[in-house]
Image 1 (cartoon, helix red, strand yellow):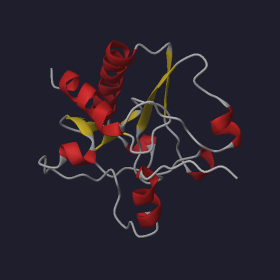
Image 2: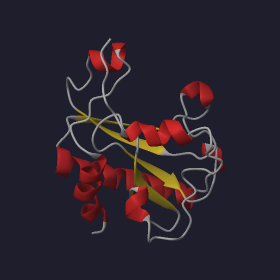
Image 3: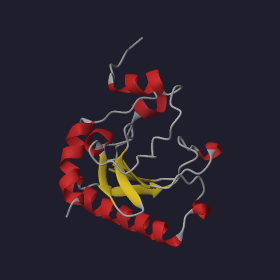
Length: 160
């Protein structure tokens, strides 16, 4: 049997059952934004890196309000989230030059929502050939970059 060492997963697997609070309910305090991987804050929503990404640059756009349904989001929040998703695509194109993107939401458990009670857009840069046997047969993702490096590359571009 082969083993792949991924120590960054330990934090998730050791605390997943304990988490009582929502990972997207980040509050108003900005001092820990870098630690939380928050790239940008707006009036109603924010941009955050996915701590367990599919590819380098995988980020999410989510409202500050704890809302579990798309129909529960007001127009202003939805407009801001859409604008941030567009900005995310622009930033990721500049930094990583992907050949495509996956953008979307997983709403509900059967749709694959990892966080079911707080909606969020996924913005995932993609490259032709970026999927391989590791994801399909080994249930393992290969990431070419440390998430802190990703944060440092993207953060300045959201602060324009």
